[in-house]
Length: 120
Image 1 (tube, rainbow, N blue to C red):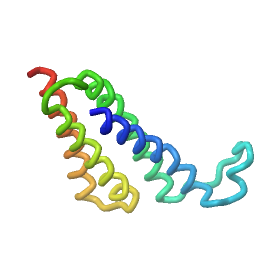
Image 2 (image 1 turned 180 degrees about the vertical axis):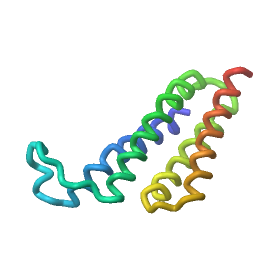
Image 3 (image 1 turned 90 degrees about the vertical axis):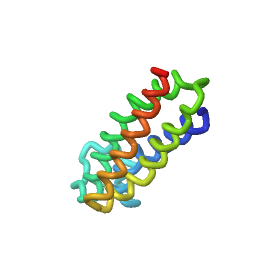
């Protein structure tokens, strides 16, 4: 389970970098104080919303994963969650409408599998 917690945290870290990376795209303005932010592109806006979405998901995932460190079969839910979130990000950023919803539902299903493992 520790591996999947670290994978989820790694994904979260990468997603925190994406909005700024898309907003500045290698511009030297990124090294300044950022008092005046450039206009957000379509992809940058999606990256912002995807970050907000994964933040909400991590609030559920991390406590469940920590509670389930020693539970049998709990890793399956974590695997489903992390893999679905990895698939979700590029689908969301590229604006693929239905597949990204299925990936999001799959990640929710992973959380539900983890929650069911707590109840036995």
